[in-house]
Amino acid sequence: MTRLPRSATRAVRAASAAALGVAAGTALGAAVAVSAPTAAQADTYRYWTYWKAAPGQSSWGFSPAGASSRPADGAVEGWRFALSGVAGSGGTQPRATPSFERICGATPPTADGVRVAVVVDFGTADARPPGESPPRGVVEYCATRAPNITGLQALAAGPWGSAVRTGGGLVCGIDGYPRTECGALVALPTPAPAPPAPPAAAVPKAPAPKPPAPAASRPPNPTPLAPEAAAASPAPATPVPSTEADPSSPPPANAAPGGEPADADAADAALAAPASTPTDGPGGPGGPPPAALAGFGLVAGLGGAAWWRMRGER
Image 1 (cartoon, rainbow, N blue to C red):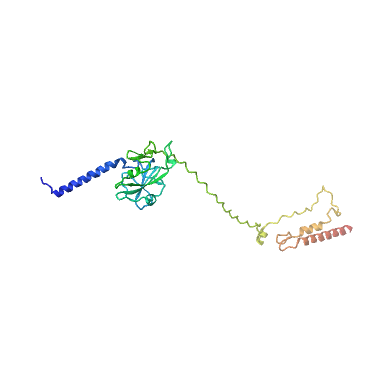
Image 2 (cartoon, rainbow, N blue to C red; image 1 turned 90 degrees about the vertical axis):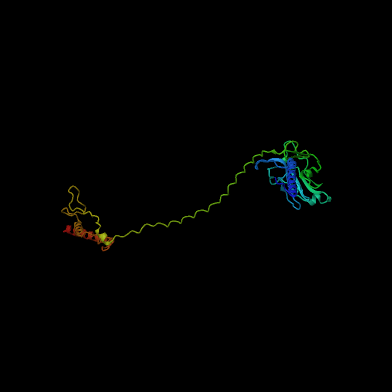
C-alpha cells in the first residue's frame, strides 16, 4: 500500500473539514432556509414574504434563499405579510422604498460588526386572516450585529425581540401576527366577468342618390303611308241609291208626272260620275277639296230641279 506524502494528506484533511463545515451550516440554516411555500406557481398563499436590496440599490428583489442568508454591510432586508405566489407576486413588496441612508445613516458603524437596515410591513387589511387585523403598519430600524449576521437575526433585532415564530422552514409570525396560521393557501374569489362592451355607435348611412327623372314620353310620330300603300288600300264602298221606286211607298213631293223623281238627272249625273279613288278623291293628294265637291253637287242639284220644273210646265 502506497502512502501519500504529508502535504497531500494535510490537503485531503482540510477539504474534508471544509465539506463537513458546509454540510453543518446547511443543516443549521434548514430551519429557516425557505421563506416561501413550495407549491404550484399559480397558487396563492398568505404569508410573510422576504425581500432584499443589495448595498447601493433602491429597489426590492424577492429572496427565495430564506432568512438563513447573510446580508452584507449596507444592505436592506424587507418583510411583508401579503397574498402572494411562491415567487413573490408583483405589488407584494414592502411599501417603503429601500434606503440604507434613511434607516441607518445616523447609526455609527462598529469596529467588528455590520449595519443592516430592516423594513417590516405588516400588510393591508385585504391580506389579514379572518378575525385578525395588522398590529402595526410599516416599521423601519437599523440592526447592528457581529459579522456573519443572518437575516433571521436581523429580524429578531427589532422592537418585538424574540417574538418571531417559525415553522416548517418559514417565518410564520412576527410580533404575534398572524396568531396561528403559517403559509395558508387562500382561495381567491372569482372575479366578476367584465361587462360587455357597449355597441358601437351606428354611423348613419348616406342617402342613396335619386335616380334621374325619366324623360317625358311622347307618342311616336305616325308614319304616313307611302303612296303605293295608299293606292293599294281599298276605298270604302259608297252606297248607290236605287233608281227604282218602291210601289208601296208614296211618290216624292217633287215627283214629276209620269212617276219619275224631279232630281233624276242629278241621280244620273251622280251615277255617271267616275268613282273616286283614294288618290283622286276628296282629301286625296290629286283630288279637289271636299268643299269644292259639296258646292259642285249643290249647283248640279239646283240645275236639275229647275230643268225638271221647266219640263213639267210644257
